[in-house]
Amino acid sequence: MTDPSLGPDDSLSAGELAAAVGAVRRDWRPVDAEPMPGGSDYVYAVTVRNGDGAERRVVLKCFRSAEALAGRTPERFLAEVDLLGLAGRETDLPVPEVFGVSDAHEGGPAPAFLMELMPGDPPMGLAVGDDEVADRLLAESGRYLARVHDLRSFDRFGDLVADAGRSAGDPTDLAEPVVTDGRAAWADRLRDIVDAALDGLDDRFADLETPLREYVDDRLDALDLTAESTLLHGDYRPGNLLADPGTGEVTAVLDWGAAQAGDPRYELAWVVREFTERAPVGSPTRERVRRALFEAYETERGIRFDRDTAFERRQRFYLAVSWIAELGHFDVWWGGAEASARDERAAQLRENVQALL
Image (tube, rainbow, N blue to C red; front, side, top):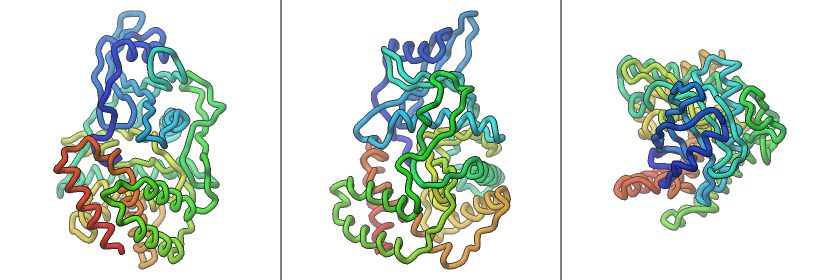
């Protein structure tokens, strides 16, 4: 989720790719294709030709099952289709149009769907600049995140999956994603996130398990974690946006496959962490980026957070949960990075969490 090296290092054969495209749109044939790395599924930019001979560039996204990504399921994968449709229909969020869906087929990975290829580039590093490009990127990113959180609310907390009653293959027949294995209390949902991370802790971090569990127990008891349950994008970061690198205009909000129902303030803590390129807490860069994101977000939602001591303690805990989640998924998120970058990040994570203890 945090490192661009995440994703399959294998690829689809020409036959598998053609089977996937044909299962979604029988009148489309792939002419050429280029893998788009950086995600947990198979994603390709594909030139397709229809029955009339016309060509267009689209994106093919196919579910990829892997032990390391055990939390990924076809139902979670298909929830993205419905969320893209809902966002496109009910908001002005820049999201790709979905052209078709295949729940199952022979000859290639499934489910799969085809969607519009959006303009722009991932705005990696742009947000930490001190210029008009950064200002526009942060303002639009904050506003768009607010619109995501306003799109749906729920009565429980948990991962979102496609409704079992959705119509296969018809992107216009939108279903409402539903919460799976939902929790009535947000604190219980946070406990699930932490337990999933610490239960699978890498050996290099094994000495941190007991003190981190004690830290989380203390925070869950001490903090007011009453929360509204809203739609969370689940992985809202520069790597999952597209933007004009010259102006900072956000041209696409992508990769909704990790969507969940949760406290919007939790996602804000994650977003600040990612848009600041993991700058240290209290650094001028982090404070400037955080202020810009919060101001745009609050203005769009018509709210103002009371940024008192209780609020800041809760945000710090949410940031800590994001660090713990990264510890638990370290090999998945960083497995494809250079050894030096992986070791540097491991050392920084250890330093971050030890400061909590």
